[in-house]
Figure 1 (tube, rainbow, N blue to C red):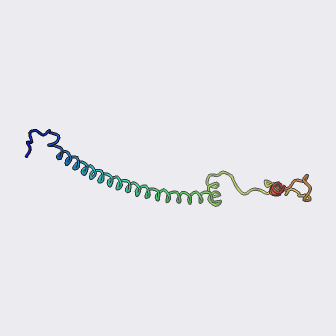
Figure 2: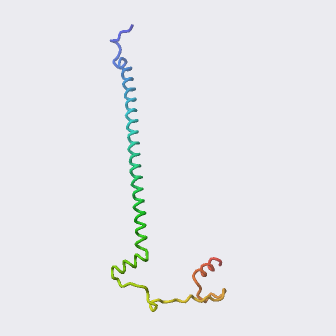
Figure 3: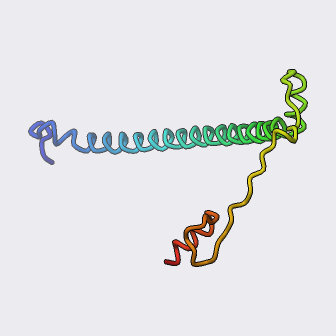
Length: 126
């Protein structure tokens, strides 16, 4: 058997350091695994809370859309105008202007004013 006094300290503590390093590696991996699972759980909770909030906001948006449609309806506008005494009412016949439809000429005559839709289709075929 060899004399242990002659061996250096590194050789004597080498296996102990390897075991310590291996234990630290395993413990660090375990702590990292637990931390990662905790983060996943917290993110899942945040996603669930935000999905619930999104559902609430969609419900509120739907209710507000219905309320807006009701407020824009002609009966509601008429009632509100009467409540505010705005003096609004149906147009009198003298207040209505009737515009005649522009006359259309022959298909080859470009001097006569034609409706816009006709002019657009003619322009695309040229």
